[in-house]
Image (tube, rainbow, N blue to C red; front, side, top):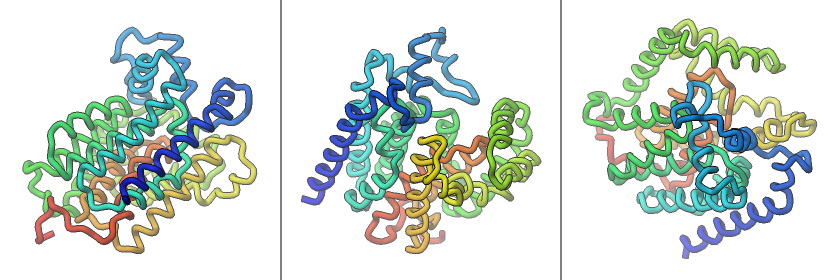
Length: 349
């Protein structure tokens, strides 16, 4: 009965997405009305129409990854309604994977928190990478619980369609849970060493990321913020990423809540309303999980979320939507009836 209610909620939610698509979504994507509920959807659609990529490898770069959206558009012939149906299918698939993984969560509660973010809803309407990242994370959750290599391979495949950082993250998660990791039962030590290693590697490869850094500097100059995020990047570029990781992660995921006044005078609907409301919802989930004592590294999903942040917080680009997979994981963590012991962690941790 409980599972049937969750399915009904998903169905009604999807129906709302279909109604929105026909009432507003199509006209917004066509530019008939000014309502930008998407981030890069039109960019992917234009790239699909232009067809300027001569190979799959040209679709992937340090700063951009068109692979997943373009392959999806190619599969459905660019039909927006079919994109909507595929995205709805992915949502159902991701939730089903969590259920099959035997992850001890109340699915209805998890879905409720997931639906608090407008990014969840608007990711169903048009082509994007957030919905693919949800599926990838669901495969990873299934792998952690069931250890089926097929789940890991499918997660790795999905990661190629999102961002190269996501692929790196999946590899790191595999190594973190592997017997090759002699610190797998000492997670605090492991995270500390990981952050130190990432600090050194990023500093040594700083020239490789010069293009992304330039984009971040332009964005920082156009932003009327406190300049704190820019200072984090300066310290990070000096090899001190391990020092600024926690405040930079919190800023990257939830910093927009300090600009909540933009909700009442938006200049960009997606950034000032959709992303803002997502940050508020994500912060609420984070705070509830924190005060309920659920944010512990002994929890596999929290551990995975920290590894994800360790990789993605390195990016100088300020994009809270990149951390939607962390929101997905914390929704699962928060929906547990009580803190569950990790099957991958021994008592000495």
